Amino acid sequence: MNTLSLLLTPLLALAYTVYGDSKPLFSEDFTHRPPGDLPEPFMILDGQFSVKEAEGNRFMELPGSPLESFGVLFGPNETTGVQVTARIFATKSGRKFPTFAAGLNGVGGYKLRVSPAKGAIELVRGDDIKGSSPFKWNSGDWTQLKLSITPHGNGVRITAKAWQGSTEPEAWILTFDEADKLPAGKAGVWGMPFSGMPIQFDDLSVSKVP
Image 1: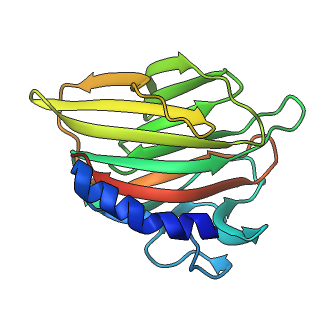
Image 2: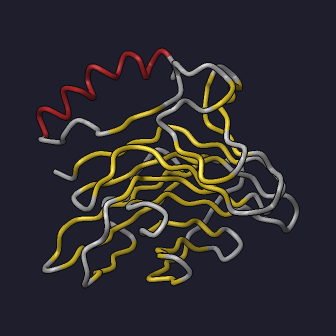
């Protein structure tokens, strides 16, 4: 977190109060985490995740090998009425592309997955793709992900968006209605370093949907 971010923090807190957003249930930007093993609030499912530092910024990093799918969970166990946000940095190598995701409701929940090889973002649960949309991904730029699950009828509504750059899209890009309620679970992020390059994660947050 840079000096500008520190100056903005009180203003962001005020914005939460003014606009009715609730305080995050979980927030981590790794600023105060020493490089090395992940702290206890994180639950590593698989993979050699660790805290790294580069150019004055600290983040969580997944190595570029082995070429498998790895994930880490964080935050409280929740069922609905929550959203997760994350910034993820990845690069391609030749014609090899990474894949990465953010999710809610644990391992068996929903994930917003960025699939640069397909030029798409996808809403997935397990091996099932519930929705997809074209997405222009630029290698070497941070990608921001936001996934929300809210009550809808007797089930839930899952909404998601992803973007690069400073301007967040106003509308949700993907929406899917699930007829059944979901079991409680933690939020998480996943990385598949198929390009052989490390994947970095930062500004992880879980909050109640106002």
